[in-house]
Image (tube, one colour):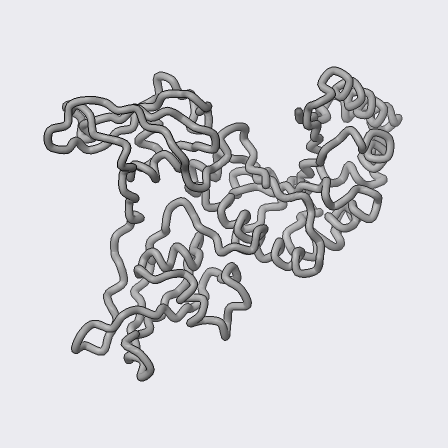
Length: 373
């Protein structure tokens, strides 16, 4: 259960009744829903003395009833939280004293602080947006210093799903877990790599690749057919870890040399990621007059998303959404047990639908408008 202070109630903050109202509402929520997870989503300034509707006092009074705080570190004008120091160590501007560690120093455990940031510029009114690769470096620096909050939240999930293909959640999730990020779709290169002379130590050549927005070692490796670990090993002199790449950075890509040429292969030009194989348990069904001629009947299981289902069948998730708009109001509105029509090309001799369900890979959040980790 989440709780958010309404704007009309924030007008009570000057006389302290706002704090009392939030405390009483939390106690009542716990009484009515004793086993529920209760969260609050205050803006960071509510943890400073500017407001007598103060969340430091809320934590003191009913903190044991609140599981965590989704704190909004954005839309605060001159307090922009747009650098590591401003977000995690010491905030400036009109709301000084509202960074992650400053809130923690006021008595709010780090284990209850979820860092909320906008996913794209479309999710912010004035300030606070930080490009995802830079935000990932903030989180890695925080972890290296032992500053490990509960997690992070992206406002809002639909921006990540529709505009970024889930890359924001994957990039930040990788930074948080320490695993090189594995985006849901591989961006294509916007430049031509430069081949160099073959190595004298092995039958491999090196190509130079310039990192673009949304890249990861995994995504770059997919373009060249190279394991991300091999790219990391070839660049350890400039990469402290597998996540520390940035836009404009040049990477050496180890690739097999073309026989007799002394050069590596040409950079892939396809703009689409390689489609995974359709699960063996699924069979194409009766043809229709559409370009996607057949449909599979798929049963949603726990952890599914349109993206993860599409990965199983080699289908872009918008195609699945468009095939189910009669039952889906939005891409995130799927539920366990729901039947979805999966558009797939027809094979020779196809003639019937099959019901498919099963385990999936990493999924985008399938409910709400926030991505939390």
